[in-house]
Length: 345
Image 1 (cartoon, rainbow, N blue to C red):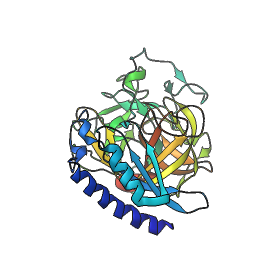
Image 2 (tube, one colour):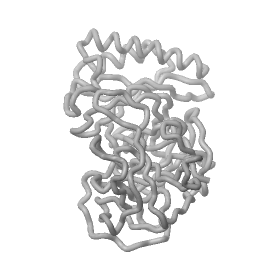
Image 3 (tube, rainbow, N blue to C red):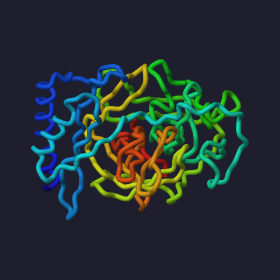
Image 4 (cartoon, one colour):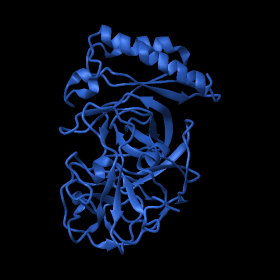
């Protein structure tokens, strides 16, 4: 199928899947329920996958949770025909660092080869960062907002659940580097303050998990990634080779396995429950280990030629070709548009 036809087919299959779910008594809004409620599965995420030969098929993603899941998936896949790319994802969660013990404040380091959990000055992409009341996530990129009266001073771009963490967070809250899970604290490790978020709310659908931090005066920045400077963006077409540098797994390589995924259900814990995200990018590892793990949230995902594709925010610990999980990414152009910024050059 051509891309336009694949999009039309995906829309038709989404309506078909909703009808099937209703027949099986599955709630129409499973993402509005509590995170631990098994009735949220078998909601199916549907997207588009590039196939051999350059045509497109339908990506069908699911996680078992109730006895009717397999039956619904089989019927949707049969309706999609030979174009169906069916995968079980495992449970998908936001990838902030949640379980690490807080360690003593680490020394300042400058070498990129050292761990991403260290205290690093000047700041650079891939290092640990977070709201002072959050554990840890990743500094994804530096961005600018033209015409804000600050001479295009850079902001930090990361996830909502990294730089804000909860609906109670407010602009002006302290942001530290490294994040608290890695020993960061106020005032010694303060680098800026929360400036803006794209809100997330229980029971509401979403497209991005994103926020900005305004850097304090005198905080230096290094714009380079392992691939060099990343200043341009693109929408993925599928099957791209990609990379990211993150707080937990550092530099990893991957491959885009699906685009335009709707109804990706992501667990956010007690405050937000399970949220449904539309128009997402799926990435699997291209190596023997995972592409991402907890704490990598906020990482910028870019092509091998240094073009940015998305902002990493969630993942599973199972699934993918090598069994180490699948990673979910917000399209970068959607993120930048939502916040009214562009990548710093």
